[in-house]
Amino acid sequence: METQIDYWDAHALLEWQVELGVSEAIGETPVNRYESPQTMPKPAAAVDAKAPPPPVKTPEVDSVDEAQKAVSGVTSIDDLKSALMGFELCDLRRGARNLVFQDGFVGARLMVVGDTPSREDDIEGKPFTGPVGALFDKMFAAIDLDRAAEDANKGLYITTALPWRPPENRDPSPTEIAMLKPFLLKHIELAKPDVIVLMGNAACMTVLGRAGITRLRGNWQTVLGKPVLPMMSPRDLLRTPIAKREAWADLLDLRAKLANLT
Image 1: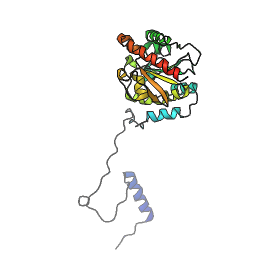
Image 2: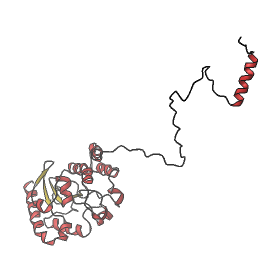
Image 3: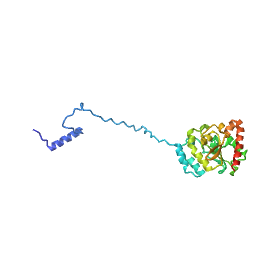
């Protein structure tokens, strides 16, 4: 005979069980836990409040694509300089003192692209300064050209293959050359020279995609529809004075080309 439990007795019994710590009701039928498989949840890993957060993976950036975007809307040389100064992806800028952008007369028929800036260039913020610059000026004075002349036929417009000096004057890496090439090509486009001179390996590598200035010098090329003459740089000539004879021959060839294009 079943025994009915009074409501209040059952209520009191339930309160007593709760006070004892009972937190879960069980079924009427007993279960043998050793016979039924169970999946126990894994305890959560302890969190160390002092541990640094896991690194967040930054998506890789195509520096060449970003450089092309940076110059896509540029319509003046001043805007190009601003675009270069705001370009943060080139690590060379972090070790350089100054941006070496240009010198000479904007509008000159001849544009000279030099190698990477020297220590003196980095300090002055101008290309072809110091002993290298002194020889540069003498070379072009010999064919009646002067960076200070404000005349399209007598003046020079000058820039460098890369606008920042590499540490310890090391050669620029292929990545650095590819990244900064869009800026140089845009510079040539905006300067609108009749003739371009590439002085040194870095200039030839950036514009022509080839190095080996001793083989390239004196051989006219065409870039952006313009005649281009590779030449030994004054820096090379100071190290190898015997090469000045070839440099003089190139200067005479350059003078003839400018006269023929008049």
